[in-house]
Length: 131
Image 1: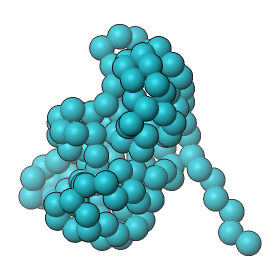
Image 2: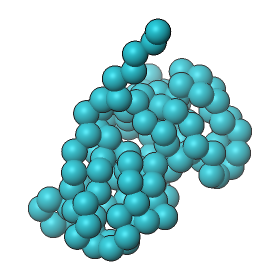
Image 3: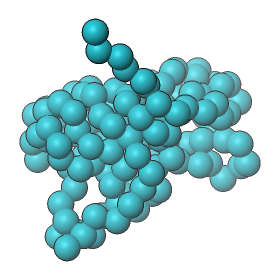
């Protein structure tokens, strides 16, 4: 029998209504103890939102290390083992070493939809991915 260890998650306060952002990339907000959706490709992703906080100040559970579902944008098809980083809308996208991008996850499933696919990923601390 296989055993799954989900990983390390932490609760923060949502900085806004994030009820439509489950499985999106989150960063630290501008107020201590709050998280916000990643809004730039250069954002350092803290983790992936696990729940649906419906108002600012509500508890937001963020997976910071381990396995999670993630909302992805596959303008370029995502394959198993691809390294992923956030886009400007809080979705994970495929990264390549030639761009010197920040990566935070590895794909454990493939995706081909331009937006809205939800796949399983392994989340890790941010690192530069470059040639």
